[in-house]
Image 1 (cartoon, rainbow, N blue to C red):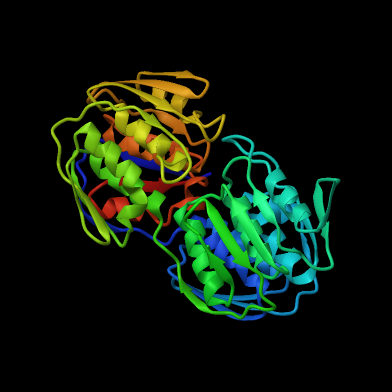
Image 2: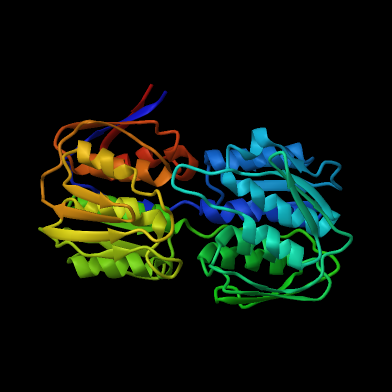
Length: 417
């Protein structure tokens, strides 16, 4: 099993670009099921989750070509409407085929995605929404069985914002009869990007990016071309890599507005940042202070940057209180940071981080999930000695060529079996 070796104590400097957003590319690829023909996406990152999505689309009958960062999906009239367990279990986002299949074909059999390491992410809101739109939904033997003659527009009110739920039902509503309103919708940039592509296909969606999305159903959609937005989480991670090493790093090809919450907290901590239309630079620092952070749905501080920010706070001057409100089990990286000599006290959904500059010391650690793997690499960049990060297959699910990008900035990092 591959691992990453990271030599700490090296200041990172230079410029690095952010890849396309994983969490945008995935729903975009599944949206192709709504319209037969050739769909073209640019700026698609080379990641395990993208590959898993393509395997599922091929299983459903699609033909796919992938050259560089451009993906072409040729969608036929499908003959299979089943997403089997062996494919869905590899990636939770596979549930996003449910809405398009129900909208276009009126039937679907999709394996339940189950739980995951960072906490439960139920799909109840997806299923209740489809029922409100007239679908018959049954769950049996680990599968969701959906059937409907024609989806009908409805008023859907989420108990709490759900990203994949918003995406699934927004796609389903595109081909429904009448108007669908999604209230308390998720507002993440990736939802905005999906809606923009659906509108290019001929959908009538408005309000995306706000808490109320309106979708007027249309008879048919046609394929289009689209450029995937930059990955805000990768951009934030690279920015934090520069910060934790005391270097000056510019992250280009990103959208700074998508990272307002992170930028605000870094400035509060004492970092100086320069921002223009498509890049962010963190400048060299001689010290920074601990700040408190609470994760919440966009535009608040993202849960997907919580672990990486915690690594930064281990080197701050003073104490930080980090509160996780999204997932109930997203502090598994804490015990690994403690192995690196961090002083952290976890209390269910709150972690108290007592920062001490220069305190981290290298040790073998194990990544428990995607963002935890990035957190441990950042900690390794600041630790004394060479840190060994095991189980980095998690990293490859969401970061494109991370070691190459960090090496470009001067890091001594390599992958080994």
